[in-house]
Amino acid sequence: MKLKRAAVYSLAAAMSLTLFAGCGSKSEGTEGSGSSEGTKSDEILLWSSATGPDGERIQKTVDAYNETGPDFKVKFVSMQADTFNTKLSTAGRNGKGVPDLALVASEALPTYKSQEMLISWDDMISGTEVKKENYVESAWEVGCLDGVQYGVPATMGSWIMYYNEDLMNKYAPDAMDDGYVTFEEIEAAGEAAKADGIYSYANTWSMQNYSNIYLQMGGEWLDAEGNISINNDVSAAVIEELKKLNDLGYMVPNGEDANKMFMNQQLIFLPEGTWMLSNMEGIKDFTWKETFVPQWDLNHIVQCSGVDQFAIFNSKEERSEEKLQGMVSFMEWLQGNQLEWVKSGANPSALAMLENEEYLAMPQSFLLTTEEGRNAININAAEGLTYVFGEYDNRAWDMITGAADSAQTFDEIQKIADEKMKK
Image (tube, rainbow, N blue to C red; front, side):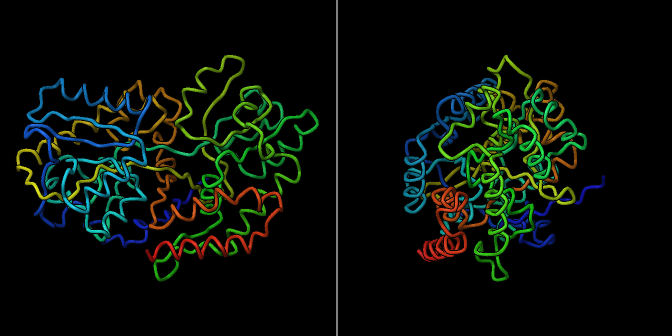
């Protein structure tokens, strides 16, 4: 089957191809840039909200880089998300105590840019290996705003689907013949397995499932004026499908632990994040695998992901040209040295990792090993989506179970997002 390239309905994708071509070449200078207060002159300070095992893996990656003997070593500082967001916003506004690099979520980049907190990578990376063709295209493009490169992609976390191969072979033996599972196949599997008390689908994180199905059905996040627009027929169709799966008894009921059911072989298909890899690796009782999220239209494959971006914030203290070059050197080194980092289940954004045999043996690598997979990756990065997703998460099950009217609920979500965007 010949696949059409999945459209990317995000702020970055709304730009023209000409605009994208300018990323990495348009000069905006680095006036006003500087190092964080208290940072050594020969040290690059990197902030991140990654803590726990994820933070530890990034620290090991940074340690490996520092062991190469760079002129500018990297100091990694991780903190809880709320603290990170508050400190970064405060530092970005007053230009004091700013890190040299910050790992920010794709959807946050446009907000920081609109608040004039960021400086461009363009001058620094001109003529270097930090360039569009060395990265997954959608991961690179989301860092390009108004034709200027404000982000360099790090790793990608994706909402994918785990499946119990043993149960699939019993209840849906042909589901993976073409490499994708459709909602029609999930419904058929649910009907076949229902009598045995086994579910075929789970709404484990509402906004993740919604965003994938919404885009697969042809929805767009932005209207003709570039504003968030989700109060529409496509959103209603998403709820209709999820409500159908729930009403027919194919979907794990609200309040039940879908992950536990998967572990106990009571669930065939489990939509979840690549970051759940360590949990899956503990399974010994059955064969599990990873694949794309369920698809609505096999001619329009969509696979939503998030990709953190290395961003540079304005500072009142001057960074030397040598330090700026050191930051670029760190980005170049990372392209082929993210193995420890991606052991969490993440995928690299740099294509150089496709030459790493150990990475290619990891189950999440299926997203990057084919052109179809790379083209299907969608980065949700439209400014304002965080407000939509937060409200949807709080209200999704009420719509799915029929406790709330979907049309009224999406109207309320739209109004809340519009109001918050004005602030």
